[in-house]
Length: 215
Image (cartoon, rainbow, N blue to C red; front, side, top):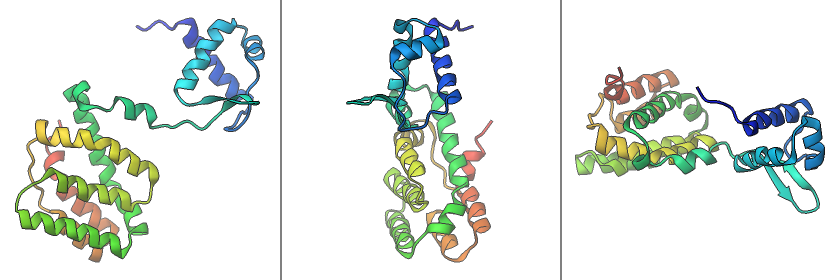
């Protein structure tokens, strides 16, 4: 079992203190001496805890204001470590499954926000696939990337970009691609003429070969 260090304990205490005192992003924090006294710890240990929060993007030091609580970039740390060559196959598969679950839930956002030009772009990608008559990873990425873009959700779009190397790696190295009953052209037609429920069913059929591999 992991044994918590003093810095671990103080970091937890510091987080609890900030919550208790209702600090919000943009608020200036007390000086180190005040925080150390409030937590009953040495300044050295407090500084290590503060440095951890800085690394997480939770606090910044600004001129004439000192330490300020900021809204952290929740995906930044994930972006730094999401590199297929340094991730084991089991984790890559887990992340790929996360992508499957996310795409099954895109329908509501797509039907609320899609525009005619979005459909046109999807049609162009799907038609390009028909011309080549073979699976190409760039078309797969382009089509599904466009779906994420159409949601209008900045976090989803950024997350999809982060998943690209994982998606490409799993598709080309781990998973042998097998097409579902519904191809990209079929998904586009469902977006044009079907309902949200129709699209969810079509997306499941599109991704079904992947779901069937689940253990």
